[in-house]
Length: 123
Image 1 (tube, one colour):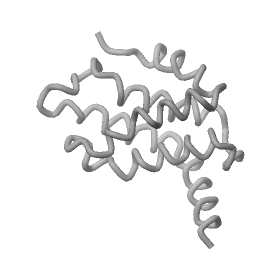
Image 2 (image 1 turned 180 degrees about the vertical axis):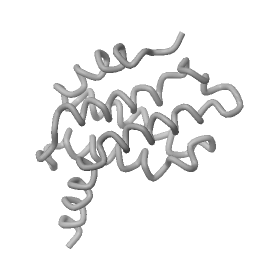
Image 3 (image 1 turned 120 degrees about the vertical axis):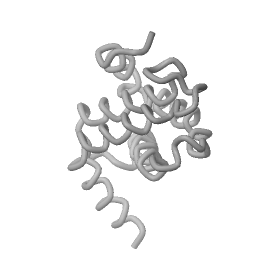
Image 4 (image 1 turned 180 degrees about the horizontal axis):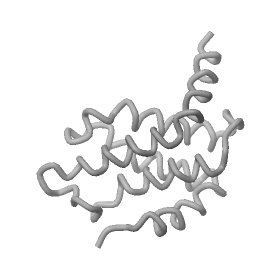
């Protein structure tokens, strides 16, 4: 059985409140950047991971908690091996890439502001 959106939201809440949990999640996600099934979503996944990492480290504070919750819920979905299409099956990461894309779409304004912040840091 796969996770429902409500259960993902409930699972994501404790992460929003604890930087250590966010950083553990990001650590767990690192290998997913090298999964063949996520090739098309790697840059989006990396952006979401960087966003959460900067928030957890206190480097970025101009964020909306509800947007962070959506992003963490999407990242939790990615690491759940028993989701709509289990990761062990051929094409098993297609649903993960779709969830990442949906999260990016839902929080586009938030991520645009984050990108501006990141661009300003690299000057």
